[in-house]
Length: 141
Image (cartoon, rainbow, N blue to C red; front, side, top):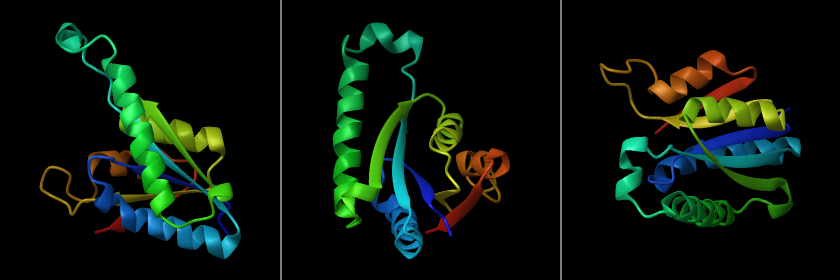
């Protein structure tokens, strides 16, 4: 059914991402599909650049790449059908661009329980649901 599944994760909460990863892996196994796990790093605000080391962005990216590879390895899915990518920018914008780039037919993501501020879905999950050109599965924790 779904051949190309994208799973956006927040590496600051890897346990929170596991229900989405597990759901994506199950769907991919059932359909012979592939899974790509994506993490989006925020841009370093210009006003902070003089206070962080010159190689801050490089260090941040390397840390994220190491963490996402470990997360992928721990999910137990066939490494030949699993890929990871780290992007930088606005979360929902980068998730939607990655989905377009890989021609995803499903995005699987987690969302926190709603609060008054976000009511139904977290702001990033809500944007992805509204603007994705493919199906989106939101996994509640």
